[in-house]
Length: 523
Image (cartoon, one colour):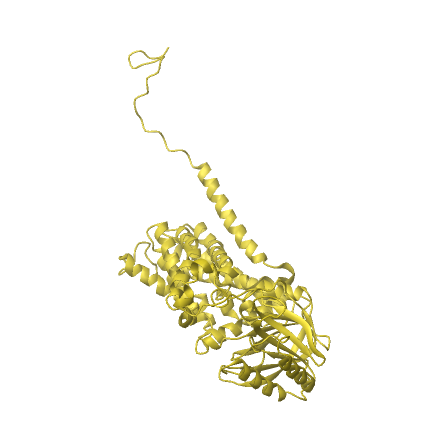
């Protein structure tokens, strides 16, 4: 079927076209948990891209890109609506501005009757443009990398192998490249042969990665327990229930017990009674206990979210303060300007304070643990840095109780699989209210997760790994490659502009000069 380059029937109205762009842009959200239709990601962009391709001008293509991205941002963050209300639409529209260039790129590469060369080049250019939007949006000040398209492939083993080589960025490039190829196959029939060849080459390359990329080398096992109290009102009751669930773990030969984010509501230096109870628990189970304190510090001004390690001898002093805070949830950017958001939704009434450095904590038994707090598990660079510093197990302490009946808990837990595959280190994702889950060094699931309906503790036999992945060593080379593609595209456009012959000057009467005139031609 060939899609005409002009406007689609029924979409001649800019308002209807804009609405269609918003709806079609939201479709990729179905690829993420909880629907988790991972296979849909490879065609989810096609209707949106076909709409952009039909745009009559580059400006309209960019607008369709922005409107579709607004729909996508709303869909993947819809669980924030109870907290931010209508403000979520404003935030989505602002973030979606990053997709204006991508919409223009799709239009410029595929609009009308593109040549075979241009349609084939789109397989590299369009994914690179998408990745630049994802990269900029991943900055913590813009909300972080929640909903990266590549993270929809968290349960697909070949995609996890790709992540071990190029991170989630490489997976995003592959997913968008396949979508672009499908668009060309549908709408540009004369370019089908080279595009099919390019897609086959992608499949062969992915297969080669699957076969030859270094695999994690097994280096023993660790027994880690997760304590998930469930929905409990009040920090004292939450602490008491977590305490009771931890007692049930006695005699299970554990290396570490992990509590979720904000599991302790008071600074342990201010509450020696709570510290003493944690030390008693550590002695009872014969393992270190990693808790998370959300409280005002006694030694420093402000409220911190901190991972604190307790062993049988006492509070160890090993502490990690959360570095990347959730915009509006834990601080309000430019509060003097946007402070009104606290009256519209459930934005933070007081800004949390930031930590300054990642921390690797050695346990009593020698195991080295790298803690992350909440949505820090969405940042590939943070888990990579902990791995480079020697962490053998990555631990994420999270709390999604505010979004208990949404897709957020499942989606948050799925990020741990990507971080495990990228780093070659197991990841323990411990939450207050679910979903708690553990993933091995290759991103494979370890044991059964604790769902949002569970109030329980669970023990996981976690495989450890030695060595490092290509991504842990080489970093974001896929991002640099995408940037190089766009630079080459710009350079090629500049060369073509320089080589384009100047337009001929229109014929007309010659101007008179002091030495010549119409009556007296110059000598």
